[in-house]
Image 1 (cartoon, helix red, strand yellow):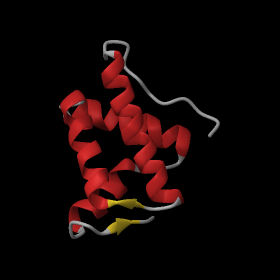
Image 2 (tube, rainbow, N blue to C red):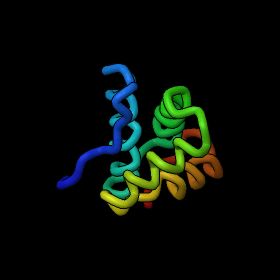
Image 3 (tube, rainbow, N blue to C red):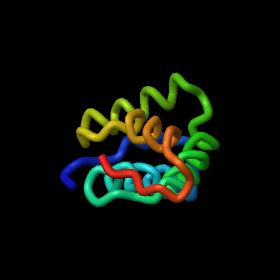
Image 4 (cartoon, one colour):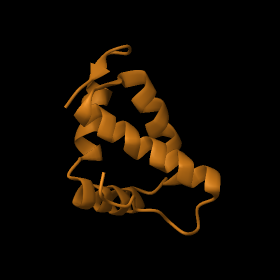
Length: 89
């Protein structure tokens, strides 16, 4: 990993850690695969921190720009998958 995660200076330390955990789950979905339920729990927490669609698009767009990984695609596949399934991109 040779990039920085997009973070908001207004987030608390706990929120920063939780957002990074979500981005790491997206990376894991591409690299090794991740359990759907784990990913969706991290996404729900991410949405508590980034509730607006506009801010989500901005933050996730910045993440995709630096990493090449699409949070949108991973979350869409996870939403369409059955609980307990493994998500692998």
